[in-house]
Amino acid sequence: MRHRVIRFLLALSVSSALAAEKRPVNVAAAANLKDAADAIAQAFQAEHPEVEVKLTIGASGNFFAQIQNGAPFDLFLSADTEYPDKIVAAGLARAEDERVYAFGKLIAWLPAGSTLDLEKNGLAALRDSRVKHIAIANPAVAPFGRATVQAFQAAGVYDAVKDKLVLGTSVAQTSQFATTGAADVAFLPYSLTFNKELSGGKVFFVPEKLYPRIEQSGVVLASSKEADLARKLLAFITGEKGRDILTRFGYGLP
Image 1 (tube, helix red, strand yellow):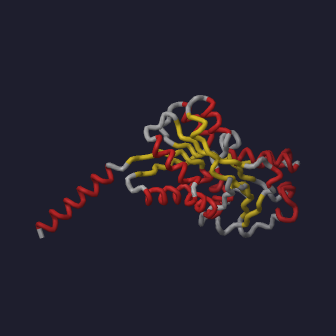
Image 2 (cartoon, one colour):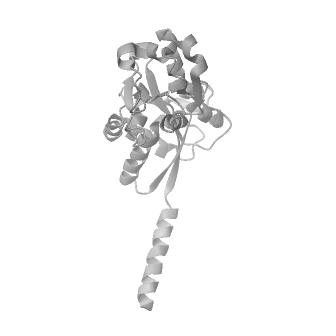
Image 3 (cartoon, helix red, strand yellow):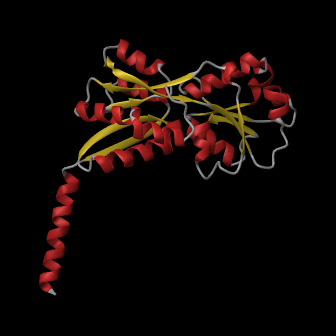
């Protein structure tokens, strides 16, 4: 019995030592990527067991500000190309270390029992007096929120709905407004609707002609202590296995 305990403790010690030796790659990922990024991290770690992908999920604009202030990320996966482009322009990353990895799709999400007919009336249906609250991500920091405002403006409904808007700090919080009943309709990335909390609602694809294409790019930061690993991860995301995962979560591909 004593020998068994000793062997167990030795095995535990070796396991802990191996875990401690894992090389971390710190990734700032836009909130629309939450589930897809988890799947990508698991797939990458399966191929590179010596690596630990550490994900931080949030709004792209907030990450941009944090990176400007020296946040210790290795890789930034944005919900647009604007923030990574600004990081390159500021000398915080190299242009050759930025790559477009996906195209996002904007949808309106409605509770299963909603009678709002977006399919028939389009965004003009949002003028309906029964629609009291429309959840969108804060356009100041979230590219999908910015795309939503552009779609409202292009459809000619922005002035009619602007006082109904409820702003989430990111698309993640916007989805919470939807599922908790705090909004009658929420404008979200299609990728989030694969989450079980949103899977029971109605999905209306916002016509792509109403907003600029949402190109999402990733960039390896010049300050990264694991730049080679970060480049490998970005290459994995834009490679066959990463593209398969992104497709599974509803993204378009470059």
